[in-house]
Amino acid sequence: MKVALPFTTFDEIAALGLEVEINCPACRHRAKADPRSDRLRGKRFVDVRFRCRQMVQRWTAHPAACCDTLGHLCILPAPGKVILPRQAILYAHVACGSCVPHWAILQAPRQDPVWKPVWDRMANKRNRLACPGCNDPLITSWQGQDGIPYTDGWRRRA
Image 1: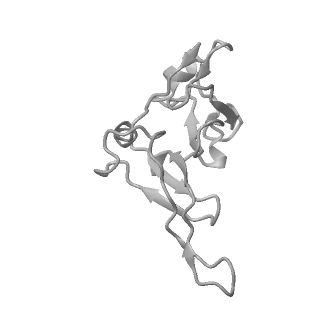
Image 2: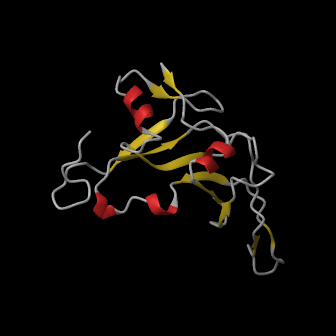
């Protein structure tokens, strides 16, 4: 059975206080996108395409040109909720391997109120997260660990 993400639109991303970053795979330029902007209001994050407008000098004999590459969307936690290495908190990175351009969600904590119902439904090993765009199963990679002595995750209750 496929489980839905807790958000699909930029409005829901903004309401949760998450940040959106666009990464260019060609020139490595990074830019923040405001999920509250009028241009993104009501749109699903998998349907919006971002183009890199960074000027790059590729060859010495040619003038600088616009990169014009499709950007990869990255949804980040709120600035105060970024998980640091010393915190030893269990979290997941979620991405779709089928969608073009690529998108990813970084640091979806196991104990966060937004993600806890999703991860509880995923307790059955046959359940998989579904991409809101292509409906394919999402790639989920777990990081961190609960219960490491003398860290912020020590003696956490599940």
